[in-house]
Length: 217
Image (tube, helix red, strand yellow):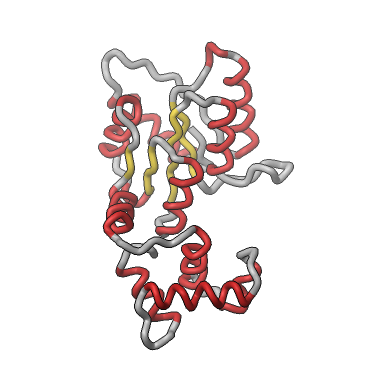
């Protein structure tokens, strides 16, 4: 379990130990930053007797000293490489649809839990389902995915990122700082998005409102 708040990890541990099945035995290693976590991952990959069945990662963590590992997402990717049989669970305060979709696409975790949704009973339920029949997504994640699946509109990752950045207040003129495209290419994509979402007044605000209605923000 990796989280930079010891009390949160203590709560997770107490819940899982109290609700485990009679036949289950839990050995739990903990880490509070990316360096500690990566050391545990590497150690487990070398010693086959200490392989992890499940790895819990908070998204927001103190980065490694060399700056190469900056988040729980990075640790999850390394886990896929070093411990391919381990089940990965992501816990996060982020609930923006773009961030959720990016986590699912890049990591495809066996569990994705939004902390604001989480209760002790849900954590216990999620843990058991992740062990036997993953994936387990919390209610906010499922709600977003259902809206996305129901929508007939297809948007690629770059278009989703444009929408996400605009929704965070980033001005169009600054989008090139976040997306590897020319300003003219971004303008063309914005024009296409407004056609897709049937934005008649041409306003970015209207585009974002329509994207929210269809579950893309």
